[in-house]
Image 1 (spheres, helix red, strand yellow):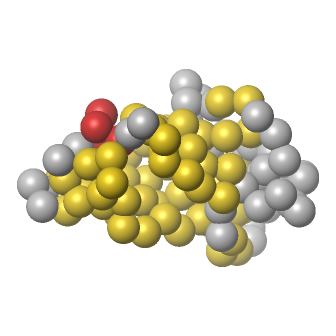
Image 2: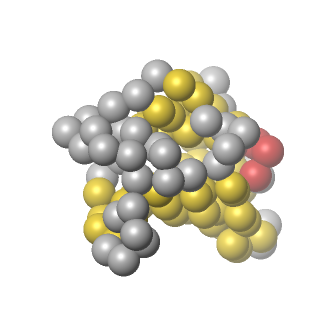
Length: 103
């Protein structure tokens, strides 16, 4: 898998001390079968075991259609790894919404 941490845009939506919510937006060239987003949770105030939910969305090349999808995820040593749906191999922009508890 190719890590795309530098080309993903990460926005903190809920910056309160108890709950954190971040939004990750990838480039339209993200391919679910080979690309991966890596997020160091502590950089965004989320505890290593604090991820509550992750929702995934995919956009068409023209940004006209948005569909929900269940991304493949895992947390290892405080780093969240997110990949898209393996069956979807065409490039598309991905949006991942992560909710977690703070450190």
